[in-house]
Length: 523
Image (cartoon, rainbow, N blue to C red; front, side, top):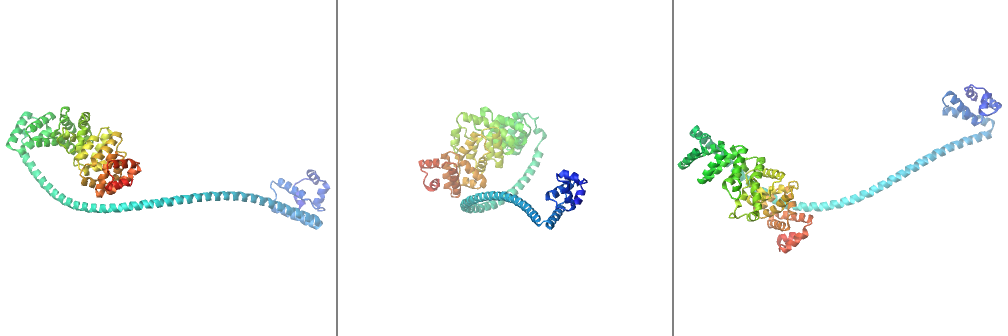
């Protein structure tokens, strides 16, 4: 086998002996089998052959060569055979040791990694246990809160059920009234059609229109009034409202006022508001709201504002309030009329009292329109930085709570009031106004609010001045239905840190007895 390997090199034995620094005779004896070749010689020959061929011998071929060398040693020299076998075993053992050392090092690394993971998991477990403990405590607290809320809702539920029964009865009565009103409406529509036909026959083309001078028209109206011909008077006034210039409209209004026909003058203004363009309506309003009239009350101006508030769009109403109402309010504030006017809502003898009511915003809140229109108007006026507090104060005192309480609740939204003065007016002054209306109506309007809006209103009330807040709380406690709302407001007062302030004021005002005293005691 060694000869076959050597022949693959293609060199002479002498040349190879020189390469491996051995005597040529030693190389010859190795190849002829006269002497067992050393392991170094065999290993080098195997490397030389692998280099010559360009590919090393396989492990199987190397193992066969080594086995044959060991067999040769065993046959020739048992001692050398045992020594070689021991060396081979030693090399194998060394390789095993090295492999096991590498394995040991890898296991050490893996053990350190696992121990780090165990430490991390233990820390995470500790954190989870702590979180679980905190969550358990929070859940216990939440359970107590929910039980308290459930008890509160159970009481509120009884109140709501009673309210639902009342509303159902009212709904049935309203449905009956609606059916009756619809029948009456149909009858009136038939009468209107009949009257329109009669008026069409009586209406002569030459009797109306701009061709008739205003003086002649007024004389004709005087004749119709004297004769008691109401149909003719109504026909002529409709044509005046429909087609006459603003100056002539005011001449007719002046004549009607002088003749004691105030109701017909109010109808004429209403027809102008409904039939004419907004530009014409503005001209009419400018005359009625002229500066020399601003400080006196006018039934016609009030009727005109009522018609505008009822029939015109919200953007037009914003223009009207800014154009006609702002000037008077500024005058009233400058002349210090506001305190005496607002302080005595029931008085009608004070000067200019009804003039305060003749603002567009007041008329819109009082009109038979959705209260969302009033809120939209308030929003437009706030965008234009137009003061609204005084008008709102008057409206709250004049209008029923079911109209004003929803508006106040909506204004309690944080985003509804951008200016500090409006916040003060709505949160402070209107709170004072709310506690002065009819008790039953106010309580019903407050309880009729959706829960979220009622909560916003209570949040706003918790920030008003202490005297107003104390009066408001007393009002809620006096009404049995609203006592739960008073308790909720007490909780909000405690949350904003006003408990001490309210207790001191209650003690000074001797309010520490009765339901209010119990509520104050809970602070």
